[in-house]
Image (cartoon, rainbow, N blue to C red):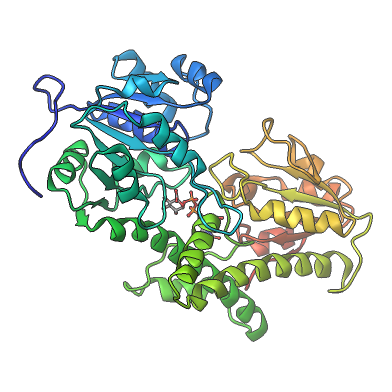
Length: 438
Ligand code: UGA
């Protein structure tokens, strides 16, 4: 890294005046964590009620540690919220953290991103560095730099929902993608105090690395889900197979758990965008397209498994049957239902005429999912059910009184799509148990 320091500093403290555009998972986490690291941060969002709530310390997302960091920033005067881009006029560094959802053709929809650029145009000080944290296609960062007439740096985030604060403060890596040495230096100093390898890369490499990482995680899970199907047909146990694989340092133990399919606000949209980018570049990325197809196949497989478990036949009818769902969020530890495989499966079961009740410790109270009646007691999920389908790996599901649930159910059958429960204990509690690849 170049060791010259450019840009204005906040006194001699080494702190920057940081602007953050977007107060979603990434923007709010970045703003609160950077304030925690000592910077003076102003976070702007177009959602005025959200800004008002944040000014009062009310954090709208469920993210461990975030309310505490927001409160700390507000209390110590290092964190403020606004709805006008003009509030960022004197920033040394501005982070763009706006959503880039899937567009009509599978590519990233840059509407919010471009509106942010328009809002910032002519607002930022000449020495400001623009940091792109939004996940954007190759070329977008350089375009942002041209539009704003300022150096732009691709600095992708790798925050997992439910662990965002931890991941920000303890990153596996910090990627700084730019050809501008001064801007790279500025971003490097922004993260001073974090202990992580820093990769200074070309802008395009940093942009692509984000997509590549998420798509690879998707591929890994699809691989394991197909492997689980093979285990069922060949008498192997997926847990034993993945335990063996995971001890190979080159493979690693993470992301080897079978499930109802990968989902959430990132993996699905990023795999779609990467496929689209590959297509536009004339690159045949069949292995990734297959991982997406395997994910859809996984939804089919779960629905068939439920049909088989509940009716005794793969082609049986679910019409009028009461099914209880445990978990709706796309993974445990979040309240997020975006692209949740549980909702895809619920929609499929409802389309076959099943009557669905669901309990989810994260989505409780706030969500209004389609096709299901959300209840706040797992007992109501079991009551008169022809089957229970566990879709999200909330650890508390292990601690339920399964013997009591078996008594409440009309037919004590459980389909455990996360292999969370202990088959022997469930059998002892009176359930017929089915998992994935066990
Ligand atoms: C993902 C990445 O993990 C983060 O590194 C990235 O920063 C983030 O997207 C983003 O782009 O912002 P997240 O969406 O929070 O994070 O979700 P993951 O923890 O990656 O889980 C994705 C999906 O894979 C979930 O549906 C989860 O249940 C599923 N999964 C994960 C499995 O089915 N099996 C596993 O072993 C692991």
